[in-house]
Length: 268
Image (cartoon, rainbow, N blue to C red; front, side, top):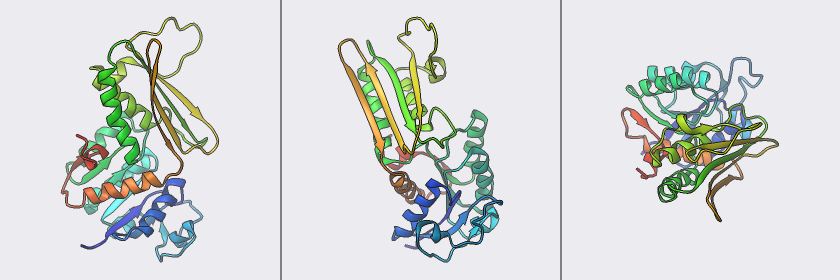
């Protein structure tokens, strides 16, 4: 079986560099293209230099040039950039693995529409461990469906631009769905002042930002006399990169459709 040819968007970023490292280490993958924004001072340089090696792949800004050489794009950038790259994927029939977060409802609809033409793996977190947590939360919420208040706490590095994180929101969606609720109707994204007593149906979110925290997430079920906490802590970005490669392998024989990591891991 031939190797999967990957294009990495935002290759010079923290996640982009980790993805390049993972692709270069994988026996069944090859780095075909590395994308950066048009004003990047790194354009033209060898993408391998970002991880301390050489691979012969120059960093480019032209989406068409990058995607014409690729089988699959991995994108952990910003919503607007991801959607522009996704349009190119549709033109060239390139598969897309999207780990970008912070999409609006309208932007998510655009991703759903694109999946009519190409296979797309769209997940707020590619980590196998985090997706295991999602499944554990579904089970816990169904069991702890009376007498337990749910709070979700997340922490990330100072550079993260969206809050709560996509992973935290997905945790909330999983819990709400298991409890027969809509997250939009019961979520609270911060408390201040005289808030009154906490409604029993509320799902609260707390966001921490600082330093170089890769990503910590905890779902707290607080009952009378006991607390249950389900926590995932990432020590590096490599689990996200390895999950993205696993997602690409899962989609290899797919022609179109929208998938997530729960599909990849057989957790449906």
